[in-house]
Amino acid sequence: MIVLLRAAASEKVGNGHLIRCINLAIQLRKLQVSCKFLCYNQETQVKKTLRKSQLEYITLDGEETSFSEAEKNPNGEFKFYDSQAIADFERHVEKIKPDLLIIDDYNIDITYESIFRPHVGRLMVIDDLANRKHDCDILLDQNLFREQYERYQNLIPSHCITLYGPLFALLAEEYSTSRKSAVIRSGAPKNILICFGGHDPYNLSEKILRGLLSISTECLNIHLAISSSNKNISSINAATEGAENVRIHFDLPSLQGLISTADLAFGATGITTWERCCLGLPSAIITFADNHVELAETLHELGFVFLIGHYPSVDDAYLRDRLEYLLHKLDIRTCSEKCFGLVDGLGAETVALILTLGKRTTLDIRDVTPKDESYTYSISNDCVTRKYSLNKGFISREEHTRWFMKTLKNKNILYYIISASNRLTIGQVRFENTLGKWRIHFSLANYARALGFGLKMLELAMERFYQEIGFATIFAEVVSGNTKSKKLLERLNFKVIEDGDTITLKRNGEEYEN
Image (cartoon, rainbow, N blue to C red; front, side, top):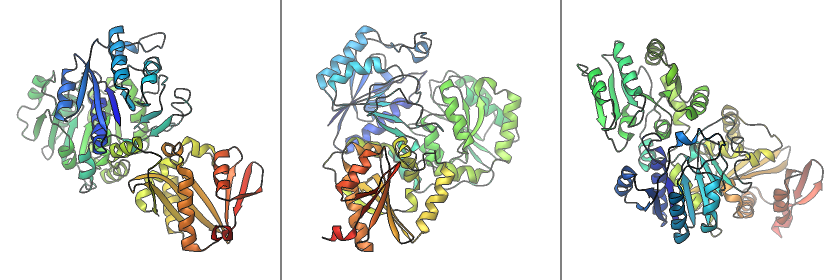
């Protein structure tokens, strides 16, 4: 399998797009997948970063304009590259003919994707703006929004597989490893981490630093992570003069060490948000990109982060008030527990496994465990699952958690998880005994539907059910428009016994026995 990747990276955009694609490429490489990046001449730092990760790249001719310039286009058309750049891009894609082209670049939309389409097996887009149309087979948005499944309506093809939410956050492998020894924070914070990206274009690091030092903070240990190319180093050094409890870290290859030992972090949104959550570190956020405000507000409302505000509106007096609150009144333990439960750090591995799924992949079955709560929540709110559920409303995390924990304790319910090669969860099957009648409920991850795993999943689950219960009769209910589930059940010898808005099917146990 050959994968080509294009990830934007610059002082304005930052390195988040590149880093998450590198994390994904490293996991794909473990699965014997060949990965190559497409870079432009001026992206010298990008090439240096790729070489450090021992990843191959191809240098393209031409130049690209900045995303900030493109946002001002009154026609809403995303034409960012000069003709030479796009022609060279297409030439390499056509020459290599990759099985998969991955694009993580705000500068690219359906205009260019349709040009690349004839030369690739599949096309995947990594995005979080939901502001332009895509011609893609897979869309990944690792962020969390209340209206997650509505954001891309009319922007992607109907067949597109969608991977939404922090379960798919593309973090470096060290975070899932460090998570095993991570602790839930509690009490007054003592170790503070400040990081607004290496370049920190609005110098928010110094703003937070001066705010903390203006308060009586002798008991705090403050760690500031920036790039050696940061334009504000002189003023930051001046701010820390005489402050023995402040340490500045330059050009760290990873924040994992500082995140692991900190009690409270100050930063922006982006990939570091999920790194902090993965290790249970409570964080206070100041946004400086307009397209990050909605995400930050959602995370704040759900209690995963504390939003100080958007940078133009955060003056010194307001900031001081918020810092006093964060240091002395914030419920650190609750914040730590919440964010720790949001991200497992395995997103890059999970996505790599999804991308390499095939019809020959073997399936396994096991009993559900408390660790499956996040996955079952994610699949429960999948747009197709909700569309064909008897209850079509969005399910809140709190509501799902209560239901899930109650279900685990119910002895009249058999609940199974189906996985691919014992690693990637692809579906869930539940048998409920109500008044002596067994009913089957099931859902399949959207990335597994197109591969015909539904039949295999139900066959495994029914075999396990009959082994545990005996050859009991099973009932199923499907919404009338859900023809795929109806046909799937009929292939397993379920018979329609009642038709209408809700179709009831029945399968006699003795038929399975015979």
